Length: 68
Image (cartoon, rainbow, N blue to C red; front, side, top):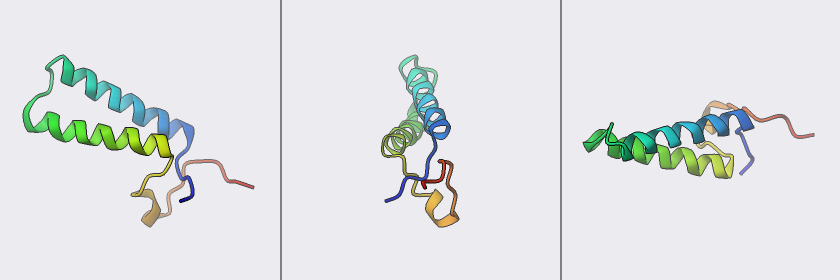
């Protein structure tokens, strides 16, 4: 798969995932909300590591610089 995420997009996703993790471990979020947000944070980390967002593909979104 071609990369479709830029560095800023990846950094923002990692920061959001870290904030969710901090909120979880400080017991700010709990229950079903915590579960949903932790799964979403995991997806954010995974997509940041591989630089591909599956939701961007059908919409043709690409936040990375063009390869020449």
